[in-house]
Image: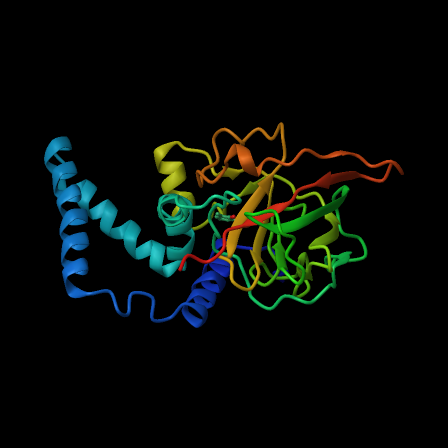
Length: 285
Ligand code: MBD
Ligand code: FE
């Protein structure tokens, strides 16, 4: 008899991320004017043609590409592929005008409407959740220094094994996902566990590209956040931990020095505490 383990697989996470994207951001591209499609499509194709001529790409290589592209779709990894290797440049361009907090990419595993946890609370965890306790306090302000009471902080991160709830099987819904609301001073406090370094799924098309190219598949440990307040641009960011082996070679190119936390051992000896504030840009008129 075969025992079916609840082993998270690339196919499961990939299919989940594809479904999430289709339900949330459908119509992506609707309204892009034909002139713009014409320009961008021609330039991307022209870059491909140049690469083929410059490196004298063979039919064997062309067919390997075709097979791989089919594989990306079949393993549901278009969101993963694009968010790991393309999104960081889109994010840079979209946010280069900002005076407030640096952001970074969203990645494939955000889910809106995570459970409300008040201004000070803990993320939903399992009773035996692995990982050192992490207590994070901070304040949300506008670029002029005004605190932003009622600002929303959505936080999501992987568990100690590197898996996200709602995308890997066997994890309770909303585990390590929550929505906090800043208090009257714009302040918040969040209890969670410190995440572990993260390896993108190796058993799908992205993993096969990584293996074939001799790359590595790691991201540094990270906390994902979205911070929003009325009249301000929503901030999407990730926070990182000093000393992580992959801070300097994140496969998703999403680490920035401004996003580095500075945790300290907790006074009560239970894990670590950290302070990190957010500064949001007012919406441009
Ligand atoms: C992740 O957890 C992530 O944050 C990114 C950007 C890509 C793949 C998995
Ligand atoms: Fe992530």
